[in-house]
View 1 (tube, rainbow, N blue to C red):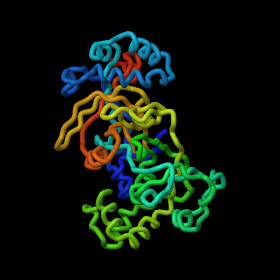
View 2: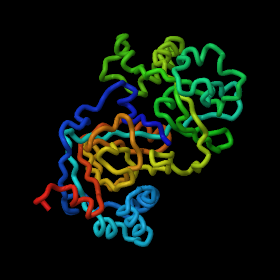
View 3: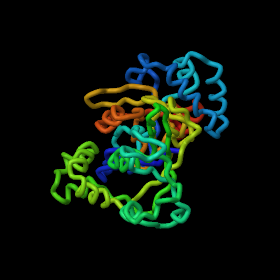
View 4: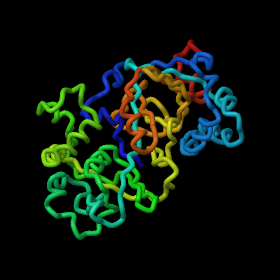
Length: 346
């Protein structure tokens, strides 16, 4: 299961998404499919395939019936229009879309001159308590000689950001992969290195990004290491063997998520596994049927979502640029949708 760290750039910079918190009781409005911008042009069959991946895990009789129907029907557009109704959920917060991705690092099973930075499993004595800080873990020698290394990677800065993201993939020299997931942490609170750079006067707030932080640390290796030590939190990993390398990482439903079809949502408003129509604004508008298969600590509110962009550097760059307004409309089983309306409205 992916660690809940979403709105990746927001988390790196220690920022929050304004307007994402629920301010009023939710208001439900049933729409027609004709009111969904771009609905007719989407690839509904692709969305149906992703829906099938997790619908069996929704523990409710009406959803189970829909999941059974999903295995029998091949026309995605007919399936969604026949068995669902679009529901706009408003909670007083503005719509906001951000992006996340799965990092990919270069590494090896054994250390050498290039691969020198270990990816650690969680020590037994660190479980369930506040343990050593990041600085102490990396400088005291407490981790050495214990067989806790999953792999060694070639870049300590990328490893730092892997810990922020919480999961990722390590590419080995022979072209194979190790997928790692969140295995626990040392119990110290996360402190933003981006905010610390602003406090020190290195950058102005509008200049700080994940890539800017990486570049500065690499140009200033001594001061850069001290900057990373500013964050005492340290994340340990576990090897995720059940997910093939060609599939996406595990989401909150413990199933692989799909590039540009899976989103993270606030489960207080949106059922995990539900189809969600998104209308993202910004420079590159996107109207698409997604499946809510993940969650995240920065994803709060009925109109807040994080789009999964895939694996690797390009996905990371695209996800990092995304911070756009819009709206999301949840597709619900018909009876469930109408049951949400006040009496007399139906």
